[in-house]
Image 1 (cartoon, one colour):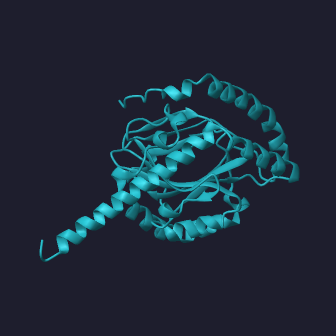
Image 2 (tube, helix red, strand yellow; image 1 turned 90 degrees about the horizontal axis):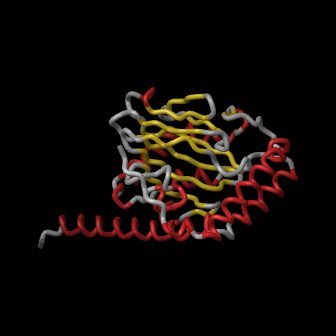
Image 3 (tube, rainbow, N blue to C red; image 1 turned 45 degrees about the horizontal axis):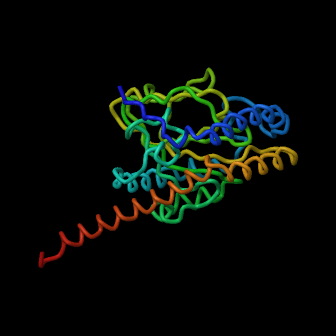
Length: 269
């Protein structure tokens, strides 16, 4: 059994706790309005035909998979989810859930994107993209049931590297269980309770990305306002700072690997 991550001390800050507590109340109040403003069904999973841009991912999934495999060569330098976002310490333990972020809060991480350029270019075409990452789940790991922050954002998963016993590598969204499959993509509303199991002895890798829910004008204005407010808080500022550190760490690992290869090929060495 994985050892739980101890709650970071800075998360016990009274001001942070106040913002989190009242933020949850605000989210619950606006969720009903967002549902009424939605141009797509307010259901746990949402049919792909509502999102024409998903076709680019299914048509190019093998290219995306190949870039993910290149990134995995530097697995040890890829941060865990809780290293990027300390608030996720209950969901991410030890080295069980790693995240290679390509876009964070709408911004392209250029150093990381350079390692997966074709994937990043396809992601650029997603309307109102918020976050995108290669999500790497260790064998035998279970992500406990949890809920996302806002109905204003939807989440998509594209299967890239899936264990052979794929039925044992799955996600539950509300009461629907879906095993991942290489090359298949689906969209869900992560404000519904969801949890993940990888009950296999193999690693699971997917492309995970979030984008704005298609909504009427009022919903779009509210969502933009809400996200702008979030960017003023530690829930945005901490991951932003940590992503920069993670990019620098990975860049250093790549330079070291290149130097090692050069030394090995140097006839004089």
